[in-house]
Length: 568
Image 1 (spheres, rainbow, N blue to C red):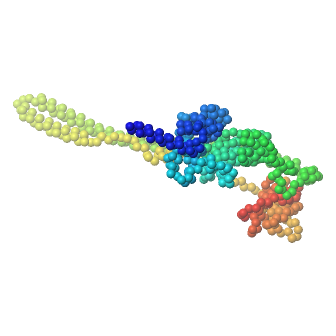
Image 2: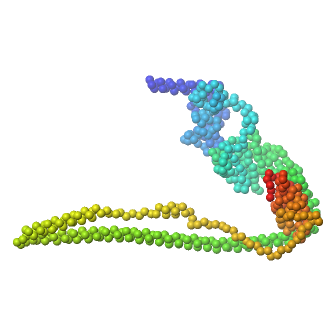
């Protein structure tokens, strides 16, 4: 009777669950009746309204797959992790569309509790709720809403992905901006964009290859899953509505997700690349090089090259000499290490000898005590042997009297022997053990090396061989306050003059041959490349960095940038 009642209750519960399920889904398709038996259905088969028993689960795709679909899946995604029914405990909690608690498909939304629910959730926890919405109805046209389109581009859990061009890798940063994972690439990554919740596209380019790689982010790990190759350089990438937009320097291409090019959306055919269109001055090379062969700057080029080659040779020889000195330094330091080891061995040998000496002394003292006891026992033993022998051999007229006396003497000796034995037996028999110094082992364990190997730089003191004084003057009203100076590869000088808010060009004879006005007093300057100089300028309101090109003895401002702080 009890068993029958239990079976009836269980059957009633299943009927109730199925009734709700058919109501929530509309009850229009008979094949859905098997959902109570098929706890996990094949995701791909469900897209074609076929209910098939899932035997596998892919953690990257978050798809439940039947035996037929898993073969197709494994052909396309050979590196994905797929769990079978033997690891079914690992299925739960992965798929976004499945209930974490019951493993069933999420179908409705409880408006009272703002929960996503499967049919078991509703039957157990939401039967009395006043408003329940069907998820397909609730999600209709959601992809077009501003709420969905403004979904933050940051990765889940506040993490970020950064493209590290120098190290050929993409790194994952957690919410504390600590690198937790990285993924290496065969070429420098130029740009990246987010494709979906856990998928990112990365463009990489070098002189030989131009590729688009796709990365999956799963539980804080980065995994390259596929890629396609382009026939142009890849600089930037964006994703929109299932299409990829990849740009080279001057052309924007549209691709589908499989890497098939759809069309060229835009091409900049103007002179120079797009990134240079905002430059204020562009010169035609034939005009710029007219009569250049006659200039002193060009004629002195061989001398400058020979001078540089000589300096490079001197530097090479200095490096070779330094390389040879490294061997000597190595031998010296190795000798120091071995000397330290020998000294440590001597200290340990001395400690060992002292410890053994202490052991010898203790053993010797105990052996002395034992010998005293043995000698006493032997002496008492011999006395008793002699006395009893005399008593037993007594004869004559006074035998009885003498025997009594001998008995009393033996009895006294026995009492003394008993007393002596008890005294000896009460003596403790010490045991000897060795207890190492408790500070020695931890101290040695805490030592990682004998000592630190450190690099230090030797400061070179340069001695001036000669000096000369030159008076730099552009005109009578020219005032000077030099705040910065740099030498160009040609040997010419560029000087920052704070008094007149100018940059001055001096030739190798230290004559002022050109100058360039600045909007504010300069603070300093430095050489950027062979013919480009950067100057920091300030006034009470604006703080800027100006860039000047030096061409054939002329100074030309090309661009500037503004900062929010003082520039020195």
